[in-house]
Image 1 (cartoon, one colour):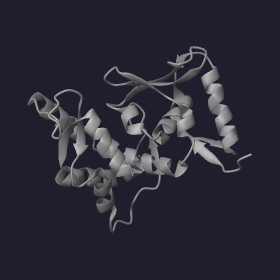
Image 2 (spheres, rainbow, N blue to C red):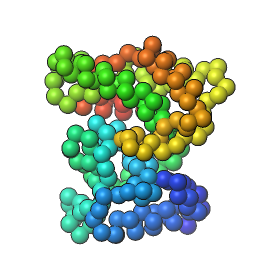
Image 3 (cartoon, rainbow, N blue to C red):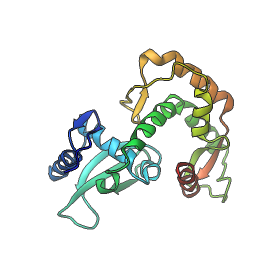
Image 4 (tube, rainbow, N blue to C red):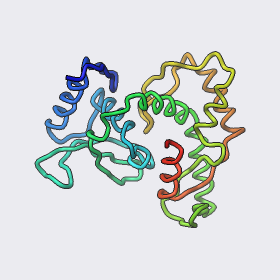
Length: 218
């Protein structure tokens, strides 16, 4: 039995086997829209998926339990995105690399803090009929951080700071999993100003934005 402890969605498991059994029980229950701590746990699982950025897409509206495409007698998790599209994901692909979850939660808080800036950019650029800067496609456009990369922006912002937050709270009501705590509001404002001044945004189609993010995480 694996003895390494783990935490997902605020639930602490003594072993990875205990965690896996809990997830299997979630899937064995009836078809439903996940809520509360079940949703928090499965959202963390989604962040661990190797193709998380593509699965999340335009943002998560809700996560459901319902039969898989391949087997109607077997349930899996389904993501319903903000644009109405859906996709399934297997928790078997989300069981490893828990260190990645810490990184993704941190990144989620930084993204949540500037989501209004990226939405505003998307709205303005979409109305001006812009296209993907790589292939010229006009459908399914997403906002991408050009040089510097988003991760680089975060690292540069954190340089020489002694007040970097170590804890984040659940971002209830948004498609991101974490946000800065209220006690770190001044830190968040400083980050928002830094992002406004230094971020270079552009529009990419879904395909090229996903390819870019995979390279950034490799």
